[in-house]
Length: 332
Image: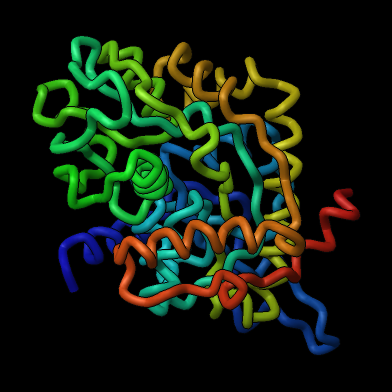
């Protein structure tokens, strides 16, 4: 295994927060076929960019959870999906590109829910004194991006619209903390990134947005579960409840932006002004996976395939599980 996978697996074993007491999976299914959720553990991956743990905490959705929840923190979506595929996690929330790369690698993951967010914080940023004034000026420049992330697709879409490709730039594959440091020190010319890192770059380095995600990308944030977890009756029952809690938290956040930003800041250590800027650009709209969601995400997969950035074409419908769509009709 390469170092990144090893790091991912170690991180997935760091159990930081629990929502209730739990036992063993074998004890969870009763003789009558019902599930004792108190015997179930969900292992959840989180990242600074989604702040799932912070969101659920702020919205009060970690109260009265009948199953145990353990958390592991990551810097971006792709390592979360690597951990789910490896069996170290059951669930994580990621942007529009990580499921494409995971599916292309044959990972055992399924998309189980989706929310669309504003794309104002999905951005390519440049230093304040940069000679880069238009996307066309990215030709030949050092552009940082997390490989396989939503920013990877945004960068691809921007380049394509300008008649450019990845061979026309010098891509620097960096995780967000490393990219922020590189931007600050002048080691890169531009950075394709998402909120709250976009807001952080604006506040701390005085970077400005060259181009945001409008008219380039969808704002999908996918909720991903491991296929083994979905095949397990007990964990599947817990996942259904978990998805509903996230949707309720989305509704709460949309109506309580200031409170959400305050708690997000407290739990992540980010300056509240940075978080507030991010939150204002990130309204949630929960969608069903049935309908045009799959078709819109297929455009992302096709773009990566055409650019030869994934080894094989991906059919998004093959990694979608719609079993939790029905709860959107009955949110209580």
